[in-house]
Length: 357
Image (cartoon, rainbow, N blue to C red; front, side, top):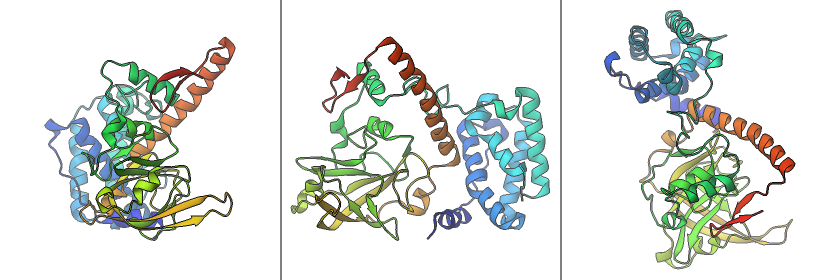
């Protein structure tokens, strides 16, 4: 199924979130409402016009906009929830939303701009208070080696690759999402910060894998697929171990760089626990190396992939875009300054020991 059709089908079956009273709006509840508008309702309207919305959705949304109009939301809360972008979805150019809702959204935009200035100047909150990366890193932490060094030097550092070398979900839920592999590594779901993917394993078994590039072979379903291992990844031996006791359910993560219908739009997404159901060994025609092709099947006890495939949400995609934009700009500035000053870069080797590049 094409990605656009698949995601549209998911959206059509998403019920409206509960509507909080105006006195208990929280940033998180506003974000939930914003995601409902942008990721569930707006695709339906864009595809099928105003009649696509159910009457109860129209009623709930109208009540929500009325309560927002009567509330005095702070700029921080609006920016965090991306509620201003939800209003742009409703009242933007070429919109197909019902006129009544367009008028309410336009009024909210005008009121907010009168209080806080033009929407285009608000930016994306990423590193500041309330932002996704606040407290994890700063905008100037543009190199993974530098960021790892910073975390390792911190007194509160809890980075330990061994924490990911355990079987099961280890506290993660299918659909969990990260801007990049290094943050998935910090949280302990995989044992490497590298964007090159690979298998998390030790002498006792394999526990997780991050798929990138061409590693998922033409699957018609997100729940049953073939994983092409890297020739140099020793984890392939544990993944295909003949000992049943050492073949644990595998945590499967997909990167946006994966060439697959089921890859996330941005970042890294955890897709749940899978079991190995078979494998084969072939010779790569280009490299002449032996390549393992491992067949995996998602456990039926895992949450529905319809829910998982909704991630990342629109706000998460925006965070990813801002993250990449700032990294590119600041990395160029820092590298130019370092070249001029003759400063060596720090490198963190696989044993997490700091060395000079």
